[in-house]
Image 1: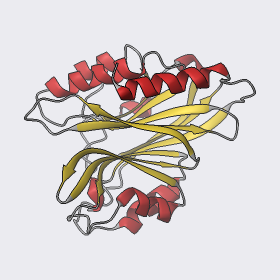
Image 2: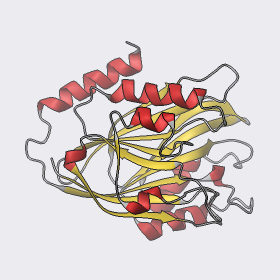
Image 3: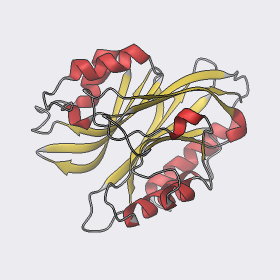
Length: 262
């Protein structure tokens, strides 16, 4: 067992000792947003627009992909911190790789403070781009500890890396006693092999909107952005939206309103 998995196991063991002792049902708005390193589809780098989209929909948790941290192309901004400031949300960044004088990876924004986090490097071929899963945990006002995993799987046509990465996600979290969401740009259609692997342990909502195309943001043709949950008997999806803000990003944003009952 590597150090990251050991830390996760120790945390969830301690958390499970008192999990849900006084918790009540929570309603959570969860968003996946590929922010295109802040560039917008017009390549004009407009962080106020990105923050404006988030502020309009008021999610509790946001998984962001294609996030830059102090790269030259992002004007050396720390994008999660900048967007956290503009949305008044807590922010975290998880590096997948060093890039363009800075770093590139995943980001999370949260209406709740973080009580734990890890950055899990996902497997990839030596010739492929590194990928990561940013694991965050929050405790809601209703007393529920939620594990929120923001990730971005490989984009190449060959799914070798995506299959390895899906298996790694299942292996990393399969023994967790915490309610867990895996959210992000998975670059995998619903009936693909990576999604079949993930859906051995995680459930994609049956809500009809969840199967609408999400890419590209203008005239989308494939559904590759997803929200998955474990413990499906404890989650109820009361709304699901595919939001094609085709200036802010080249992906449609996805957002689900979920009720978690401990």
